[in-house]
Figure 1 (cartoon, rainbow, N blue to C red):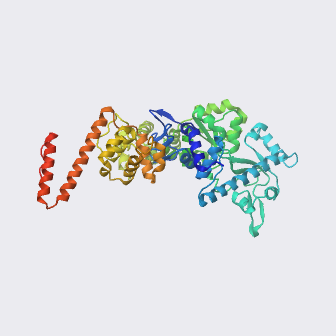
Figure 2: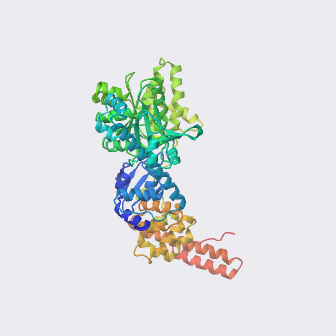
Length: 590
Ligand SMILES: [Zn+2]
């Protein structure tokens, strides 16, 4: 059996963090780091940093960071043991979980049973579709919708026959606890406690997460009965509001083309992919959420929203605008001719006609303005109305540059000068006028315009990037200069490890620190790069030495109190030192 610790070490060696995270976040090499837009917060600047040598990541925006396991846990919402298991499986490292907390164990076991029940159910539905008798209505439906057999297999489409206990029997046969099957959402407990299948007489679309695990199901009726679509309810493994159908199949296409097409239904998604457009995902009939956009923007994509031409579709497009503005993601709107959805459109006119629409899609913001203007006559009243609709949106944009760009665009659209728009914006309660500057979360690397004050973080930076200073700084006892407890903990750990270990590795140090705040400071120090160029290192050391001496003097003065003789001694000492350093003698203030 391989223990958790040795498996963890082996995995860390086997996984290239840049390659792994790069599958989910578009990364660009900048110096020693790879940077991208953080998938964990509304990131406009690329604040998310990954470092191969240190096998770690850190976001300067939301401060999330850590190793491959932390990334996996945060990104996929798993527990630590699940992250270990997933990654071990992915990289072919044998691993048997040995010890984790009872709480984690319970959570992990519960999720595992849900995945198992979903998998059994998916197989059952697939099998039923293949059944010449039971599956016939499903097959006929899919034939009519022009979904070829290989696509059915790729999406693991299935069929739930019109019976009350087909799946229930199957689950019982597999020894599944029926209570858990209710938790998984595939079985319903009716009034009086009677159990029955949730999906009956429906074509089944298994919902696969990015790890290709079945998290739930969608079922579509064959006729005009309602509800037309039925989904698994919310479970610990399925959250409708952040689920994107078709993402595992679409991910490589999204990465290649740099764009993603978002449609509303699974049939639209499958139809477009069948016609050769791979970069398509579907929301499950819900409107696009913040989590959806965050998931998508990790791929560095421009988003194309395909809406129905009806009023509801246009409204949905307009409603999503603030989300895109806030996430700093550019979006374009595709509106098809009335009466068509992507599925029927591509089947009627072919892929070329559809991509024509994509290529000429207006930006979401312009679409919004057009929508506002469409209903009016270009009068002053109408422009005022547009302005009223647009100002709250403008002030919701956090990025100054983007806001300036949109101000310019609106000023061109409606007949007002940019100055008027800025004035109006400044009057708003949130007051995002032109003067607001973005607080850069990025600390400029060495060579930038950093004020060379030797605060705690400068000392930490010096130690981390110039290990040759460790011995000197240790002898200075410089921890006395540091008030921040978390930073002090790091220094204490560095000095302790120095001499004890061959080299004070980032990993070793990071693992040794107890508080997340200390770990965060350490990551930031590594990721920001050195703040000091070659000859600045010696100057920094000299400055720190002076600071420490001054501090000792101050302490001695305070300690001397009314002891006149001692006070004179200290002052004499100070006078001597100042003269030597060419500074004017200190005057004692009463
Ligand atoms: Zn972040």
